[in-house]
Image 1 (cartoon, helix red, strand yellow):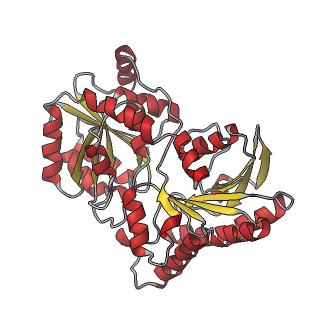
Image 2: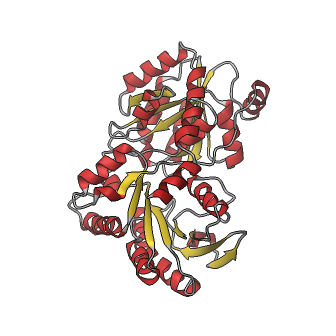
Length: 395
C-alpha cells in the first residue's frame, strides 16, 4: 500500500490519526510505503528511510503550514508533480495494490491516477477537509473567483478518481453527496477519525502534580482547549467567550496550541491580565495528554461561518482521557450532536455568547463525572483504528 499525506512525520511511532492507522496495517502484515513531506523552511533534502516493516520517503516541498496564503497556494499546486516525480524515481520497481490519501490537499488526483493506471491499484480517500468551500466560508476568496473554480475542478477530479471515500461523519457523507450530484453514493461511507486508544487517565495525586507543574488551580473546574489556533477556530469569538468569564471564580481556562491567530490571543491575555486564563504555545504529545487528563472538560471551537460539517480530531484526545467535551461550533457540524446524543458533553452555537455563558453556568452546577466515562466507552466502541482498518478492508 502507498499512503500519501501532507503530515510531516519521521516515524510511524508518532501518535496521530494517520500513523496510528498505518501502524495497524503494518501489524496486519501489509507492506506499507509512505510519502510524507518536509517543508523547504526546514532545510532538509528528500531522503528515503527503510523502517521496521515499512518505507518512508521524506519529500522536500514548498512551505504550506504557517505561511501566507500566496506561498501556501503555490506550494499546494506544485505538490502534485513533486509527489508523482518522487514515485517514478524511488518506487519504479514497486507495484502498489492500494493507494490511500487524505485531504488536505485536493491536488493528489493526477498522482493517484498515475499509480492506479501503472499498477492497476485501488484508491481510497480519507476525507478530512472539504476544500475549497472551507476557504470560501472563511472569506479567503469567493465562489466567483478563478482560484475557487481551479480548486473546485481539482476537488471533483479527486472524488472521481477515488474508488472509495471515507468520511468523518454522517453529516460529511450527506454534504458530499448533496454537493456532488454526479458522485456514486455507493462509494461514499463513514470512516471516522480514529486512534490507537491508550490509557491516559490519571489518579487524583497524578492530576495534582500536573496541575502544579503548569500553574493550573486545583479548586476550580478546568476547561482545556488544545490544537490549532487559526481562522477555522473563530478566535475573535473564543476571546469573547474567555472575556465573559473573567470574573467567574469557579472556572479556569487552559489553552494550548499554535497557529496564525495565536498572537491575537496572546495580545488579549497580555492586555487584559485575565487571571483565570492561561495560554501555552507548545508541549510534546506526551505532555499534552497528561495536561488533558489533569483537566475536567475539553473544548472545541469552530467558526460560526462554516457551511461544511467539520469534525475535529481533537475530540479523541479528550475522550481518551475520560473527560467530557464542550463543543462550540457552527450548526452544520454534527460533532455537537454526537456529543449530546451519547451523553458525553455539551454543545452550543458558535457566535452565541449568551448560550456559551449559560452552558458554563449549567456545567458548574452538576456532577459531570459520568459523562467522562461515557466518552471513553464511546471512543472504544466507535473510534478505534482497528475499527477503521475493518471498514477500509471491507470496502
